[in-house]
Length: 221
Image (cartoon, rainbow, N blue to C red; front, side, top):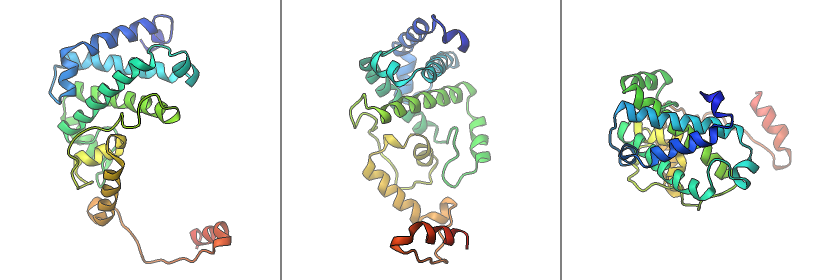
């Protein structure tokens, strides 16, 4: 299927899939944080994987200037909706996907992932992958406003919670910068709880005019 998408039929198929997804009742149930059927989740997954595959083949000139597959105006609406859907999936499921959370091993994350409905896990994983691709494009060359990715919501003060650890690992850009700073400070304060060890046992001296030499010597001491 993915090889077919890279051909002449890719444009029409991906656009038609997005038209079906974006006008479906089920997709907006995801955006609102509600559960949907396995069949609906499979359709959304197919669209996300198809477009994600095509994005790999596009350079920035084709994406931004030629605006292949979708115009930048269409992408603004798509990314806003997609961003909210992924955030809600993190908030509702409360468990990390793809990447393990702070203080949680990959094995623990995978065990929790396996307990969820497989179709929902696949949908969340594919939507997350697509969102990060579109966000990375925006980092290189902005096509949406600066606050476009921020999601309204209550962000807890514990960065080691399943929800916050997953968000911080996978979609940190949905959190306002000032809140991320506070969460980082909280993470340092609760380093032992999060599985980190902040060592203060060794002190090294680095001269201002010999940063490389002194730093290299300290690392090898």
